[in-house]
Image: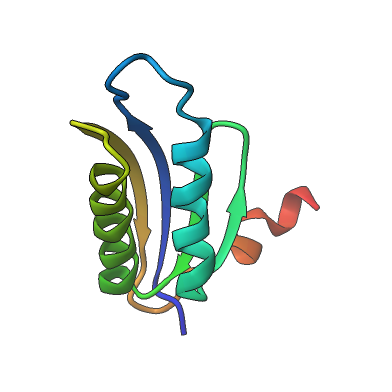
Length: 96
């Protein structure tokens, strides 16, 4: 059972001011390949899973940005951790 929600906004710096959207698309692809439940929102993407696994995905995303040529990356992260379980559905059910 998932014990954490992690929202991330990844902001890679580009060498010559290129559009960051292809970088963000690649970061979201890494989340998708990881097989965790996630939702893409306009300003961030939220993942659901085990806390250590989610942080591992964030690390992989940042390393990939460097591989793509980004000299530095800002990752703004919000975490909800509950050892008894945490899900996006439970957190937002009253709004659906």
